[in-house]
Amino acid sequence: MIEAVQSAQANCPNGPHRLRHLLSVLLQCGVCGGPPAMRGQDRYGCLNYVMNGTCSDCRGIDRAVIEDRMLAGLEVTVGTRARRCT
Ligand SMILES: [Zn+2]
Figure 1 (cartoon, rainbow, N blue to C red):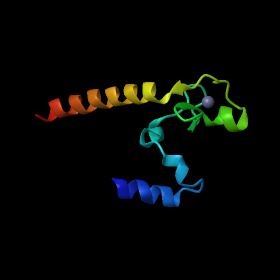
Figure 2 (figure 1 turned 45 degrees about the vertical axis):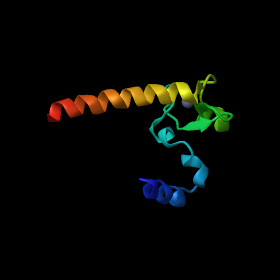
Figure 3 (figure 1 turned 60 degrees about the vertical axis):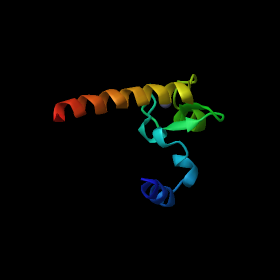
């Protein structure tokens, strides 16, 4: 897993900082569908809002909040699939 992340970082044209937070690869803006951007150290926002001004979502979300939600969703998905396999 770590090797796959390092390989993806090496091939990323925007540099290794793009995959700093592993779960960020699963995020997209709910307004425009754009990729996430870190806004400060612990907050995600829309890259299109931050860099281009082409998105109206100025709110963003705390990293801990969205990562907790994502992990809860993954637990439900994995648990559901595990129950189907037994
Ligand atoms: Zn957006």
